[in-house]
Length: 313
Image 1: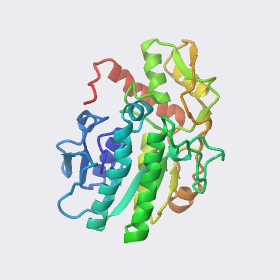
Image 2 (image 1 turned 30 degrees about the vertical axis):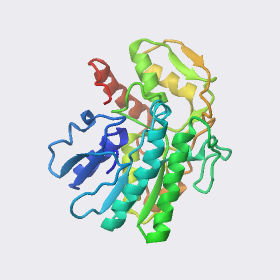
Image 3 (image 1 turned 90 degrees about the vertical axis):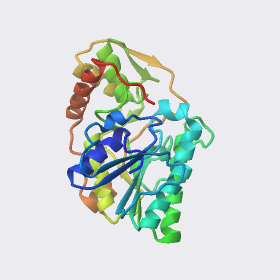
Image 4 (image 1 turned 45 degrees about the horizontal axis):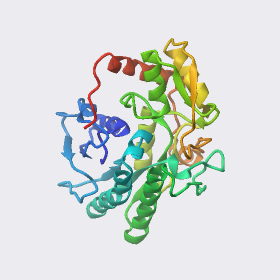
């Protein structure tokens, strides 16, 4: 698995080990830390390879599945690391696909709802081609993932590689970084620190939040299926960002006011997946209620904020 020390990747490593699956985690810790793998390090069947996937790499022995998650994924990261983000989506994807091709393994690309850009179709089905500004600041992530999807599809056509493309929507949960720029960790950090919750725009733009364990289950369901994709993976319950902020404040016991800031460039006005395809093909659907997921995430952040948070190397 590439990007296995990241937020979703670390949970995915844990889930695979719980299934008695041998896991090789490939990561250069550009936007993550080995600290997310404390439960995995030393476990039977787990190996950690510190390596930048933008350079060719190999894994000894047989490989059944290549999960490609390596990429800066939060706005704070890809805006600070634009070229590294583009390389992860291009060279990194090519190298991960080459590994899958050599080993005869199934390949699963963790793509993103960001490929839809600021969508003009709602909710977003996989047949929608998207509305992305290719030269905007956000495009380094959007276009990196769109290139990764095109490359994955080309390997399937050209070499017969068994591939799948999964478009992940707005995952949240424990192990997110407090300052990664996404709405849930930002609101929780602010509420627990006694700061006003900052809402971009007037708060009417929407997100659809999916708890990390549901996302992991969906990725594994797609991996175990014959789906080629692209296939959406997320929760079809759409909420305004203002409503998310208010709910986080309520669950944190905070009555601090909301403050409003300018919208970032190209920020999607609405975001909600049509998950009919994966539901019909695998039976997967989100199961963790939002309040339960947020409560678990707040509890984790409460523990983290009580101790110094290690800097990302």
